[in-house]
Each structure stands twice: as C-alpha cells, then as structure tokens.
Amino acid sequence: MTVLAALDGSKFGLEILSAASALAKAGGWGVRIVSVLEHEGDQAPVIPAALSKGASTVTVVGDPAEMLVKAGRKADVNVLAIGLRSHDHPGIGRVAEAVLRHSARSVLVFRTGMRQPKELKRMLVPLEGSPSGSAAMRRADEAFCKRGREIVMLHVVTSDMPVEPGSMPAPRIVDQEHYEWSSWQEEFAMRFSQCPEGGRHRVSVRMGDPGEMILQEARRIDAELIVLSWGQNLEEGRSRQVKTLLENSPCPLLLVPQA
Image (cartoon, rainbow, N blue to C red):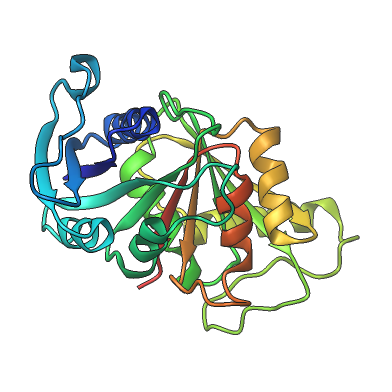
C-alpha cells in the first residue's frame, strides 16, 4: 500500500512529504510523490535526495485538484497527503477542498506550523460512539496499533445522542459511581477497538464543544496525529468540528471517509 504525497515545488511541499513519509513508515507503506504541473513545459520541483529516498515519483499535467483525485484512485493508494493554505490565507484552498470532498481514500492533511510527526507514538481518535463514526478507529487499529504506541479514544459528551443501532454514547448522568464509569470505558474500548498487536488504548471522556475538546486533548497529550471519521461534506453549517480542526489542529489530521 502507498501514501501519495502531493508536492507543489514550495518549501511547504517538502514539509508535506516529510509528514507523509512518517505516516508511511508507521504504517509499513510505500511513498509515491506526485508533482502536478498546470502546463506542459513547467519545471517539476526538485526534491532533496534525503526525502525522496525509497519513494517512487510521478509527474502529471493538468488541473491540480482533478489530477490529485484521479491519482488517488489508483488501487494501491490508501492515503493521499495534501497541504492547506497557511494562516496568512483564510480557508483551506480550492485544491485541498476538492480533494477532501471527492477523494475515495483517507486524506492526510498538513498545514505549515503543525507538529511534524516522527514515530507516531501517540495518536488521538475522536469517537462519537456510533458504528459508522468508528471508521477512523478501524483505520488506526489496522495501520498503527503496535507495541510501544498509544491510541487515545476521545469521547465528547454532548446533548446530541447518536440514534444509529449499535451506538454507545457515554451515560449522561455525570455523577455516577466510579466503577460504573470504569465499566463503560472498558466496554467502549472493547466495542470500538480490535487491535491485536499489543498497542495501548485508553478512553478519555470530556464535556463541551467537540471541536474545542479535541483541540485541547490533542495539545494535552502531545498527539502526533488525529484520526477522524467524517462524511466529506463541507457545505455551510456542516462538518463544523472538522473545519475547526483544519484551521487550528496542532498536528496533522488523517480524515477517513465514513463510506
């Protein structure tokens, strides 16, 4: 399997490649570098040997958004790594938005200023407690659950109760006895995590706005990666917590389509 890293020839592009390489190493995957040229005759970016070592490269010509989505459909690609606009430019950018909306693969999102992942020793996976929302946990277990790593499963208690069959939200009575909470956390971990490789899992429960709680927890545990399920809907009023994380996350995001 392969992480496809999209480069644009800038210094930031090399930061994206570095993050993609760390993710690929943690998952035991290969790296493919794709340079998208908008016009024939444009100069392909120069990639330092230290970053391109062991990676395959491909250059395509055309609209960047269209070319990246197409390249991500290759059968051996399981993650597409892209960059967002800097904080000096509001929004996530036309190309990134198109990839996020239409990619059939998980998307690793990196913004300049984010913490560069190294060995992925600690990851954060927000879970609302529904089966369809646990796609991120399945991906994290399959790819990254190994001895010496910790996956923190974050459940944020809100007034919205998932109605999907098989859901398991936290009890709304916050003053329950300690053993009842411990029992719920243990069952929650067993239901949504199937890691057989000896990695450490723990459940963290918070109350408040989901986006803000995810940011706080990521900073508190020094997470190197946030793995999040989402429905790929960036319309006005939708995916509010994903938009919050795209703008403010301290570390890269791995967005896993629920489909």
